Length: 343
Image (cartoon, rainbow, N blue to C red; front, side, top):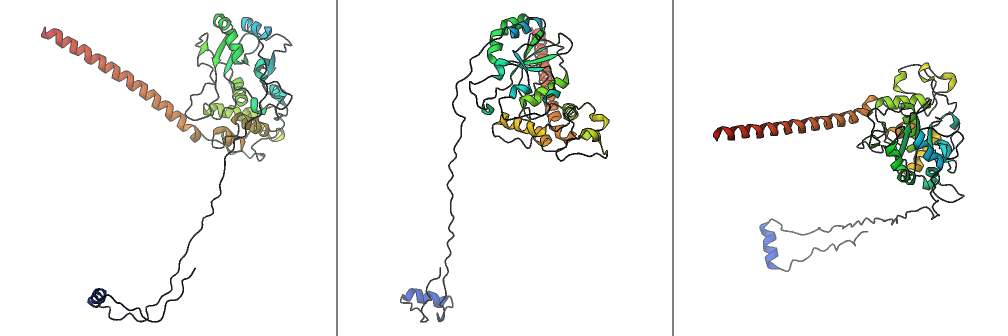
């Protein structure tokens, strides 16, 4: 907007004091001092946004039930043949929207109980009602080790029997979703009964982590094992001339010897993305190890340096604390000797 042009007539200074001051400053004439005044105003249009949280609809929770075969597994360490109380991990997602092709190629001995898989009483999809993986019972009785994910209700009911058992071990498990978290996938965190040599197969741990939605690998070797299991391109293949899909999957006809253990003919990354999306409940995970891997990126050892550095800092802190404690103890002993000498 523009103001009207000022009058060509010079303004008259009526105040003698102002006129005298102008003469002192050398301002003798005010002719042709008209000017245009321009005013600009910037109008910012503010958009009001109201955040609305869309929560899942209320449904009736399923009734808990402890199957006798689950109790028998705790006592014997063996899965009863053709028992309906145990379901393989991926087929337990049958009531969700995620569909895994070739799910029969996943491990047969990573199981969940029926009580763990059933959370609500509804005929609709249960994407919003997946139970988190927190309690894992392991057994190495038989031809191969078995990992069984149980519900909190089952663990609470079976805890006295598990404490007395010599064939199974209960471990607290939680997927590592931040870099600062301590990895629990070695199943040694709060093991009942305690076991110093509990070493489950890494292939089973790898699949358990994927099913539970773990976002960070515990170490670089576990990342390479996951790439080998899923048939993905990885840093261990070097500069080989490979034919790789856009998501990093290597088809069977183009698969090198280092990926011979992969039994998939189709990429598993798309259903894994859907599963991780359900586990994260809308929260982003792209900067994480799994976020990068599921989007076709290849990790390097540099991505695991922070983990090694944190462990080194913890070890140094523990050593420093022990050293200071020893020095303090030695100082007290020395002061005691001096007191005895004075006496």
